[in-house]
Length: 586
DNA sequence: GCCGTTTTCGGCCCGACTGTTTTCAGTCG
Image (tube, rainbow, N blue to C red; front, top):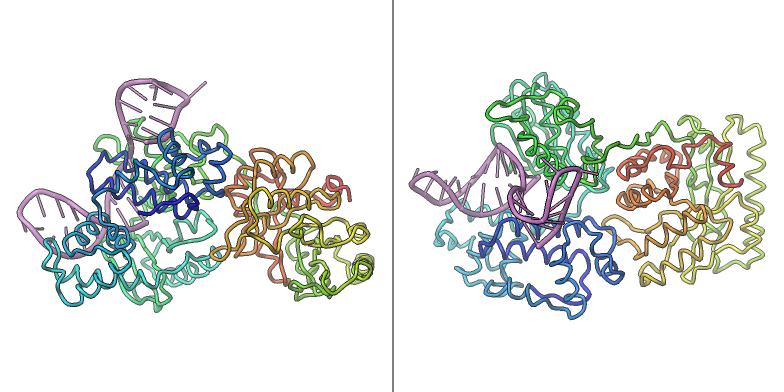
């Protein structure tokens, strides 16, 4: 495995997984192997680049990194190599780590194939393996037969068409279709989605579904009639896994209703939540599984999750919290913010054409307000993008903003707005690469307030980007930092930022961080929301809707807030208008 | 390897499914 000084989190996670696999081949202590796997998982979860944390001496903030691994990382970031890691990899063919990317091939298989078949070059290992399998030469290796040749060919084709994780919204939609199908069968007593989808994680790998049924075989046979199924990949007594025509995997579990509670608990995860829960249980002499709670040889079953948690002496833990972020050991669980707490949306785009270089909204003030009323809102922050700076003078920009203000003022007092919904005159203003705002002073004066955000130069180094952002946010009219990391899921990584600094600044200057609900953003990410909440930094859950029918999408942002342990008091747009106006000095 | 309001030493989750076996190892979640 090649290492270098500038490894990013994705590469580092891969490195630690490879190290774990290498230790497995060398039959080292299995807890040491798990320790390396834990580090990999922890790096994958980290919202900040490890190298940035290292530079600031904060590696100990990352769970799973102890003294030893911190020292190895220090060596890595300084020299680009780690002697101890080189030693772990010594004698192992590089190609095995490439082979392990194929589904179904783990460390043992990869090692065996790479050595016995003399697959020495990582870059050609996979195609060569495929050819050997097709030619029927794989079965000569001990432990391999005709079927494993087929499996490997299949695995390689899946490896080639490996797709990104689904956006949460897409996964919800897909799960809905499958559940609708299942619920038509009289054999299905209950069915629901589990896994990361139930925990409302921002992206979802595959769809997990639980079915309560007295007839597992029959219900499974019914499920297999779902028309989108391309092929069955796994089929046992309690579980069916299929690949859909769209390339997505679906796992469905069929259990009797009296053990449905533990089933749902188990497959909701997360894995690390369950591990922590089982460690806790062990100390009480109990053993947990999807079947229930074992004490000695007797098994107690649970029809509901509430009773399952209660049997461990715990309050019910909402799925969004089950990420091993302290939810098991905490004395008091937060009273999470709910959709019904939201009193307004502070980031919505209208069709008022102010000659911006970004997207215009599709709907009029009137239609937006109608929709807002249907959601029970008290106010609506209309925050169009600022007018383009390239083809307007400062004077022109100010004039455009003035005209827009007049329009909103008129709307607020007109008969059109009898809905008693206060429309706020906001703008979403670009923070330019140097930290200045894209709207001149007199233009900002005309607003109730501004949301500020980054729409360009996403790759500035940590210090520059942090300073840029704080400069933009320091203007008195700038109250909310919109989509703070500027990430786009599966498309663009977050901007590198010093979050300790940003949180401290927000706290001191009463700035608010947005949780942007649009499906491809979900920004601020949940792990940073948690840190903001811990510190007392205020949040605003907004849609960034570009059409009236997107206002309902705020549920996704509320889910992110919940995953970050936010209560209603942490979110400013749960406040009634008078209180909101007071804290924002409107 | 890491980790700790019952521990700085002695712990570290639990099971399904598959293929090639002749009782189980490997992979996955």
